[in-house]
Image (tube, rainbow, N blue to C red; front, side, top):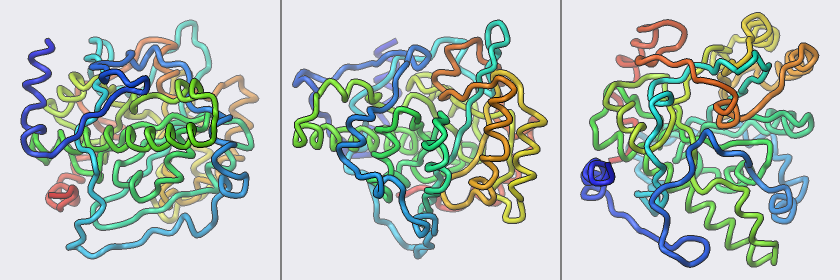
Length: 353
């Protein structure tokens, strides 16, 4: 199995430069980490409050603004392209596209997720209003961040990483369509993002040492993203197979808010969630400046769901509550319904070359 995984990585190792580094204790880096379903903690309030003021964490309204770059733009490439930490292969029950979880005994746990997408020709935004509401109301959530988005928003990324309420997942490097790109590009889109997260975690560790914070606090921050979401909700058997051997569950959703639509109202978003909610649900929203009405919708459904007995958890926590409900195909609400993205996004240069 180990030999097979090394063979799988050879194309990426040959095509992309890479750097390996030592572990936190100075030893050689581990070859695998704990299964995502066993993960329990995310972030350290001590680290977060020591590195940023409350005002810095609040962000600014202008953070939400997206900027279109020229088509020829080829900056923002990762300094490390192969991650140090490669997770153990997924167990069979986590190998397909996970749409929700069936909690044992019907426990009312749900996962609120936000995509932080950024394509190769833009710098997308950061919706501080969403993050501030979640923090003020102690709502756990998972942010699926693109690697290029991370690189464009270094402080925001590290603030999310250090927040005990939040999990940061992998949303590919630059929002490529995994149904239309080749195997080598798939490796880059997945592994570059894992590596970029690791670099920011190393930056955090350096700041922790400089601030003389107890270094054990770093153990509360996962060494690598533990979950993955396909851009456009589009995948292929090859893509799912790669995630299986990279140890990353493919997290889809079963409640679509439709918040990227400009005409989407906060009331419509809240109504969809309140009508379709069920134990183990995974809700998809956006926090990259393209979640129209999302921030204003949060007060309309969070309190009501809690009144019904629902508890918000991160995706990795959700996976510990029962078996994953999955499908061999990736889709929005029914098989085949996202094939339109193969025409509109599939042929564009969605990743750096």
